[in-house]
Length: 96
Image (cartoon, rainbow, N blue to C red; front, top):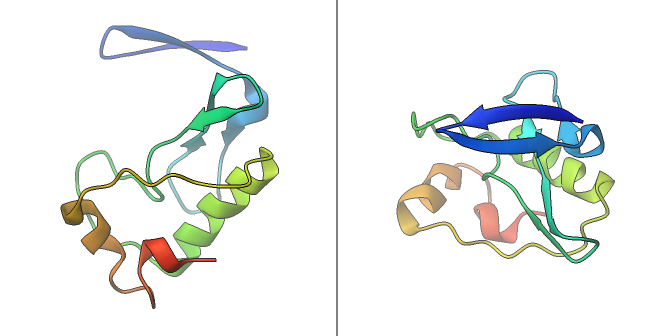
């Protein structure tokens, strides 16, 4: 387990849920309710720069979720952030 602090909040990161894709920011998938509910930033989260996202980034994020055993995803993004995925056919909500 690794400890880190973000904005004065302390998190313990379990290495099983820390993924490092080769050309992207790290995906951190947190287990909120054991074996039931996980949480993560949006695919290709870029710390506020809000750049358009390529399909390959979405696919890496989805693969990381699958590796963690996640079978369904509840998307809570607003319209501003969903527009970042417009370049992908069908957008984020219709991705594989």
